[in-house]
Image (cartoon, rainbow, N blue to C red; front, side, top):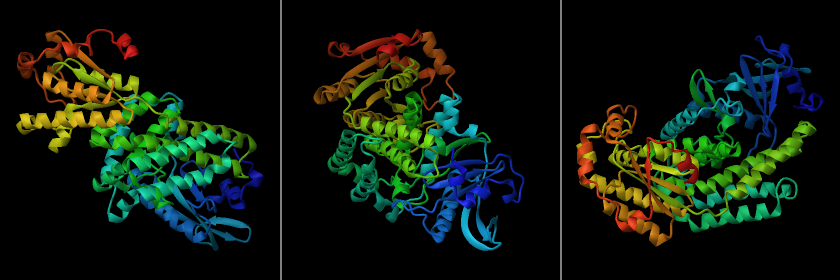
Length: 512
């Protein structure tokens, strides 16, 4: 809530119904951020840019506000074309302001379709209306958004270490003044040391991301308040238009924003659903290696922009106090992401239809792990859509060997970054299991083998009725799988937990 007497005269007039050439719903609602003023009139929303200059964001002149309103319209029509209508002119005659060119042009606003605030994902989460399936849909929507996002040599240049470091350093420079107010000196020092160290020690990861084309014109601010469900469709809106280094970023930068926001709200299981769906859709499991640094960065930037509200005179005192608390929570979250974590590997094993994938997903949500399905890895390697039926070429011995080798390499890389990796495949041969055991032993990574079983009649029934899944195995393959299965060796048995997936799995999941 704002103190209306401290609001600019233009905003005070925009709070009155007579300002608008169309019917409005009263009272007109006002929302503010550190950089924008948003007025909700019923059918339409008008978004003004505050005449501020934070360095990383500069709306200080009329020309700049016009330019960035136009950029906001252009960029947001990628993910929410249904919402973004036009840029409107605001004029002044005497002491009255008007929409349109009737007088001296004094400002611009982005005109949008207003949707119910209950449809914001942030509000859906708070009301308990955000279902797990919603997060899987969002994972698919963001994956598609990124697949269409443009990239070129100029955009890719923003993935260079020096540019990433400069952007992160800018965050620290703007927030030193909040030490002792919203964050502690220890949090500041240790968070900065972590990002400095990560960028220094893992420069090759960032070079690999440039070479693979993962630096794109992304959203840049993909948290729950910038995602909505409207007309039964997930829309991504309010992307970054004001700063190229915040928009020309790694696709994992966007992913980290959504994961961080869900976790900040206490939705770790939902964050895991989103993350695993996105990774499986894109095949970009290797990109998860840089996710921890971006999780820290995104929590910190939310702390930064929330801190700016502490100095906005138009924000009521009770809202400034709430902002201080929220900023403090984000600073703490950013710091907690820097804590060292022990990675581990959980190898699923069992025949087709034994429930490996179903249990693997449940394990991933229980431990915030990365669920790595051989079916998805195989299809990405083969270059075919996940839901397409794989042909014989996809199941040659050479492709099978390549699939398991890819899973082995990803397990090592992600466990080294502190992830729990759930390897979901048959692992029916001792040689395949031995490679994982050797990796875990050599690198001192904790390992558990979860052997999934079910009565044969259940296996056959599951395979016969499987629909809408990426797996291609059918009932007629079951006999050959049974005949070629190689039992666990005495050395392997120490890692094995056998699970009948027809039983109640609650106790097992609680102990995993």
